[in-house]
Image (cartoon, rainbow, N blue to C red; front, side):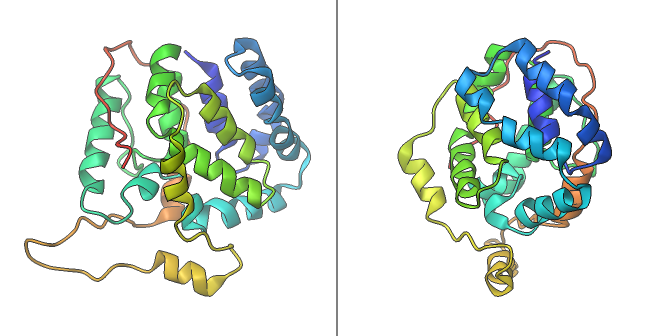
Length: 242
């Protein structure tokens, strides 16, 4: 089991007292495996320190401002790949099948593309396989790292770490395409409303598979301990790049 992926998953979870208390253990797990190069590991220190020493309510408020309210920082991977497109539903099915083939069962309330859940799954895979799978959405991680850097958020370090671990590095044009999409601040309520505005419902053969429902509830549901799984053969790609 690659404990580094499990630790990074935990760091992207909703802040809690348990998470604050676990920071030394998380840091030790990352340092013990030494999967991250020194520079990438150091970029995690600001977030580790902030979670360990910060006021819990302030940590929770900042988390909500970043990941719950801002679509461009969503922790649901397919939000950045498919948006509200008709391919999103099938992509969810494919990713869930990847988990099940690897022995991981997820709760019905959880969406497969929630990043902490994806990282939990990777923690159950051999390191080489995990890094290969991580390379498929690497352009998403690079774009999120840049957006968090612009906001001076220490969460930036987690996404730099994911890019560093990925076997395939992001293409510059793919990152630029993501960064060209709207990225309103969490305090700009009008822009946020526009970003989250539902597309018109179309009936008939041209109807789309719209599947954005209860983002905050889904993020909360996505955190639970990863079960042990048996090793399985590597599954085909389940994270399309575009």
